[in-house]
Image 1: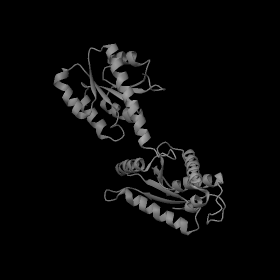
Image 2: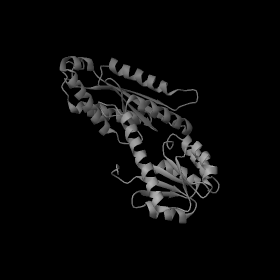
Image 3: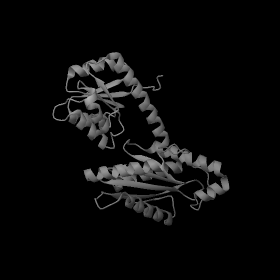
Image 4: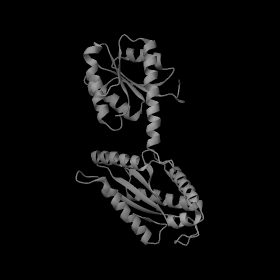
Length: 302
């Protein structure tokens, strides 16, 4: 059963271009093929090429397949990519090592084309199913945005990455103004529709794939902006504020006096330190959001 619509990507890692060519000929009609001939290139391609599966030769110069696999599994960006070892070594002797490192299977040389196609297809379909269910579990059921769990995982990962690179990280915390009166007077069905419309226009405002917008809880939303300073975050926050206002969702019971739904936004920016915690970034943004509400709502404080 072919369950995927677009070609999935396979990264072939082998220091022999002849072996890469053979595997490409076997798999190239069904999958997009990228390749690397060194361990360093393999690690980089696993991040930038976002492969769905990796075929990894064990006998590599400088960095062997086991070390490459170990590094892939220790990096949160690549830890979920299935790794299949390709080897001419005795399978019984070496397969335990690879499986303990996180590999999912072995393919032995000389290559059997039909066997390779079948095994790759089975593993690929399993991977796509897993990705599908993982994607569902990371989304908010009402708005389709990332949910709180996904946000927590993303912020933790970006905090650690910013710590390593000594780069700044910004966060925008947003709240729909006077949402309880909206729900009380227009009903929860209208409230759900309001949340979905705002989530949709917020998602459409995001410009970088490296950023994340999520539903934080109730009527609150949050943006994580890696490598963005306060001024850059303010630019995006103002766009979000104006885009939500442009919907002109009627709200006769708002205390802003605008007559339509608005949002308040608080911004915090930090360069992570070893002593710091990403929860401090949220707390800082929450304080700025509180200030925005004290200033009359429908504004940005950063």
